[in-house]
Figure 1 (cartoon, rainbow, N blue to C red):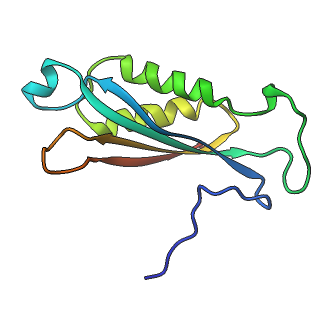
Figure 2: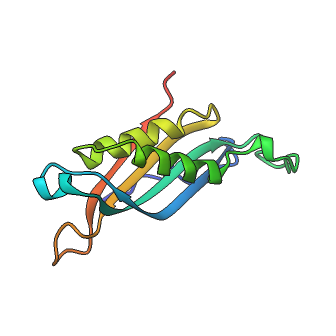
Length: 136
């Protein structure tokens, strides 16, 4: 099997870096079954962003917070998106988080993973990975 190159890797030639959030554990109102609608359940959320790197390929950019995508803001945005209310599908939740991340014009691509670790007692985790790309 031929392995495609990982799009979510820093690439100086393309002028990109990766900003990530891994393993954010939240309580979410998510699911289609009655017991899922009755109360929140634990999810694990991860995000990878492919971001413009204005100092690439060989420079050091200004040591200025305004030039970078703020991963604290990414965490706060993910939390706020999950807190918006019940959604039926993990896909919908992941898509909402991805689109919220793309609101920053420096973000070119967003890959979001939502896992439900407590869905089945004999399965470590189930979930989905979605990707969204800046239009245009």
